[in-house]
Length: 214
Image (cartoon, rainbow, N blue to C red; front, side):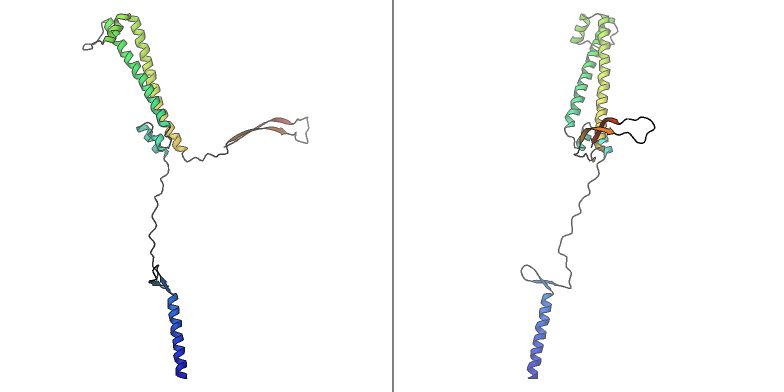
């Protein structure tokens, strides 16, 4: 009897120990034990490092537009401004070149009429026609007029190029500027009562109150 009792007690102890060990084992999806509770295994892949986005640089936008007109506008995300930039440069450049061409044509015709045409310079058919059509004074007047227009359009073209740089710089500074959706303008009547007590007659102030939200 004591022997059976001890045998039964040992069997219960063995079963209890195995149950405890089974609770400390972690099984994979197919039922294979891969670790115990005392073992630390890291199967997860290391997190990928996300590249920090570089801050928007107004200086970079300015330099880009100075090197190539419209490039700073692209960097600022204002693609629609690029055709405007090149339309202005193309139109003004054409006007400057056209007036320069007319100026040189009238200049050669004038020099031919006055006998001051440099050696090696040959009149074109158009310049010969001008020399035969106009007098010396007329040729000089037209020549000076086209020269002034050429200089004017050249200055405007340079100014347009500079405006392209300024626009890229301003947009670069406003790139991260938060423009609120609450943009409103209101006008309300204003009434300010007279302050009391008073030593001399005073009157209430009536007017309009202007409020701008942005």
